[in-house]
Image 1 (cartoon, one colour):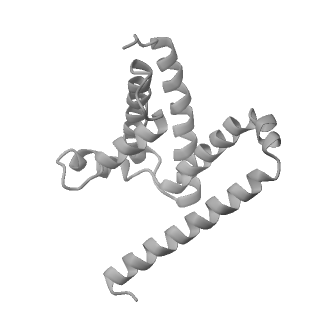
Image 2 (spheres, one colour; image 1 turned 120 degrees about the horizontal axis):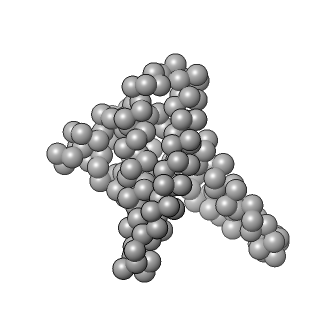
Length: 155
């Protein structure tokens, strides 16, 4: 277990807070949702993400990356059967999903941007891999939607 660099986490908090303000502003402008009422939910999202970063830094051999860990933690705190969800779900529910996607996709693009040479080295093979992945995801989503709609009696 390693000790944590608090300066790094203060910087993470500042950057995540700036991103959170942009998300909430986008939510307020684009979806006419209230900005102030969503601040506690955004704060909880940031705290959970920082906690996942801290776990990953403290235990470098932990098998999951921080973003996967934060996804799992987010799902766990949202399970209705758990009493903790009564606190987290209403607050986090004030933050809309789509405005959160914009900075996440931008950050993903930036992280891939410095690997352009590696992508070029894969040449045409990356196209085949992308087509297989996209097709698989499409059919998996269609099967899940089919199953859910049948369970609901919609089809």
